Each structure stands twice: as C-alpha cells, then as structure tokens.
Length: 236
Image 1: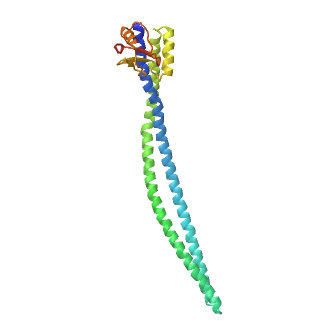
Image 2: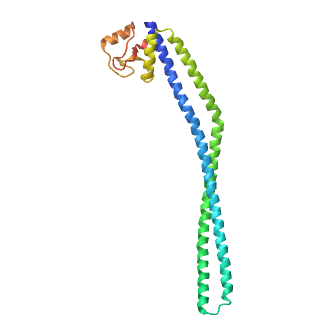
Image 3: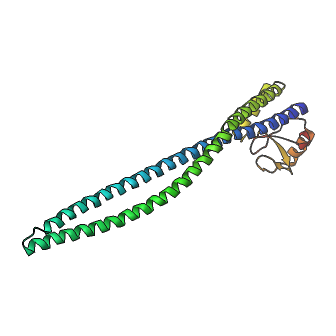
C-alpha cells in the first residue's frame, strides 16, 4: 500500500502542474485576444476621429457657402437701393441687408467654433494614431510568440497526462477511479497531506486514530469530511 500511496502522491504532483498549465491555456488566449481587441479599438478610434474631422470640414464648407450666398443677396439689395423711390421700400431693404449681415456674423462665429473643434480633433487623431501604432507593434511582436506558447503548453499538458496515466496503470483500477472522481469534484486536489493534524484539503480536524494510521501508511485513508485521499508528508 505504501507504494500505491507513493504513486498517488506523484500523480497529484503531476496534476498540480497540469492545473497550472491549464490556467495558462485559458490566460494566454485572453492575453492575445486583449491585444487584438486593443488594436481593433484603436483602429475604430482613428476611423471615428477622421470621420468627425471630415464632418467638421464639410459643415464649415456649407457655412462658407451660406455666407457667400448671403453676400450675393446683400450686393443685390444694395444695388436695388439705388432704384428705390419710397422711404418704406428703402427701410425694408436696409432691414434685410442688416439681417443678412447679422446672420453672416453669427455664421462666422460658428465657423470659428468649428475650426477650434477641428483643431482639437486633429490633436485627438494624432494621439489615436500613436495609440494604434503601439497596438500594432504590440500585436506584431507578440502574436506569434503567444500562439507558439499556447501550443507548447498544450503539448506539455499532453506529455504530463501521458506520464500520469502510465503511473496510474500500476494502481488497482478501483483506486484510479476514486482518484479521478476526487480530482474532478474536489478542485483538482485528490491527494492531500496531514497538515498539523488537520486535512490539508478542507481543514477538518483529524481523529487521533486516523493520525496514527496516516503515519503508519499501511492503508488508503480518506478525510472523513471531504473524502480526499489523505497521507503523510513523508511521501512528498
């Protein structure tokens, strides 16, 4: 039985490593996806900022056209003033010219605001392009490296599992099945140690008789609380 316990301890050590490798298999793709996501977000930010700049420029052009049209109307009205014969008509045209001048003044202010907005957007675009370049560089430098690391870890896991399974062939099938069930249902901790007279898996206080039997190592023992296989640290 001592040999069986020794094998179980070694199997648990391997499964502890497999557990850590499995975490890497989960974390590394997340890291890669994060880089891809950063690049995508940076690209979208550049495109959105460029679109805002184009909209800003288009609006400025439309407002410039409005000013030009208003100037054309004012020139037309000023020419008409020369032919006006009544004071009422003269005042009406003058009022319309004044209205157009005020309108152009307002449009000028709006164009200035748009120019300021465009300048801010150009600064934002420069920052967004820099951010995109960094994201591109980060992905270019690390994508293949991470993909290879993921594949290497998967190969390591496969090798570890094969080694563990070879060890398992030396055990009675009933023990292997019990180990497998515990590994699946007990957070990958099937074999634990007596830790200062408590179960190293769940912290349950061990009875004196169990403690004595664990030291003797003559049979397979299980925690009375969590059901894990429990043994002495001498098997480490």
